[in-house]
Image (tube, rainbow, N blue to C red; front, side, top):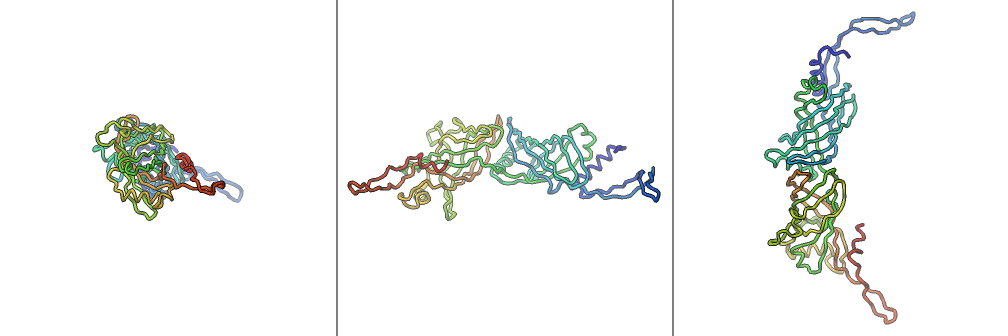
Length: 379
C-alpha cells in the first residue's frame, strides 16, 4: 500500500485500536479480469468507490491476558519482573507496532511502574503472545506499591490498566499520534505457586516448653529467577480442625524478650532462598507464649485424637499470614504473605505395642519408632 498521509494513517490505526467498528470510504481505480462470451477480458483504470465498515479492536476488551510473573532482580525502590502479554485481535487488520511502553495503573488508583513490550504485534482474528517486562517502582507514599505486591503475594487478583502508551520503536513518531489516549484493561492474577509447601514441627513431652517455643522447619520454594532474602517475619500461624474451627498456634518468628541476637533474629540470620530452587529453612521457633492450656489440649486432641495412645504423625492443615521483610538484590520491602499448607509433627508420644514371649508367656513392649521413622511418610 502506498501511503499518502502518515498522520491520517496513524489516526485510522488509533480508531481501529479503540472502537468496535471503523467506518471508511474506499476510492480508486481497479483493473479487473472479466469473463465474456469469447474468453476473458482485462479491464484497466475502472473507477470505484464506496463506504465500508471494518471490525475494530475495541481496546482488546476481554482479549488481554497477563502471564505469570518472574522476579528478575531488584535495585533500591525498583523491581524488574518478566511476564508476557497475550492479545486477541478481533479485527481483520494486522499490525506490527514495534516496541511500546505503558504505565501500569492498579485498581484505577495508583501507577506502580511501567510495562515494556519489545514487539507489539497483532494478527488478524487471532491471539499473539509477546514477551514483556514490568518495571515496578515504589510509589509515593510507598504503602500503595507495597500493597500491590502484598495482594499479589496473598494470591488475590487485581485489575490493572495499561495507560499512557509510548511508541519507542523506529516508527514511534508516526504511531504516537494514533495511540495517544489508548488504554488496555485486564486482570493480573495473584501468585499461584506456593512459596511455603510444608512445615515440620517438633513435639516435646514437656508440654509447658511449647507454651513459649515450638521448633519448626519450613519446606520452601523460590520460583523466581532472583534470590529472595527474608530479613524479618511476623506471621501468625493458625490451624483448622476437621469441624472447620480455627485457632492460633503462635507467631513466626522473633527472639524472646531479653534475648536479642538469638537464632530467631532474621536480621542477623536471614533466610536466603536461592533462585529457582526448593529447600528447607533452618529451624526457627513459633512463639506460642500466651497460648492457654485449653488450646494445647485442643491441639493434642487434633493430633492424638484425645489420647496419647492414639498419637500418630497426622498432618495438620494450617494457614500462615502476616508480614515479612524481603530483599531482592538491593530492593527491600515489608509485604504481606499468606500461605496454606500441612504441618507434620515429629517426636510425638507413641503408644507401646506388645508381642508375646513364648518361653514365659508374657508380653514385652516393642521398641518405639524413631523420629526419622515417623517422618518416612512425608518423603
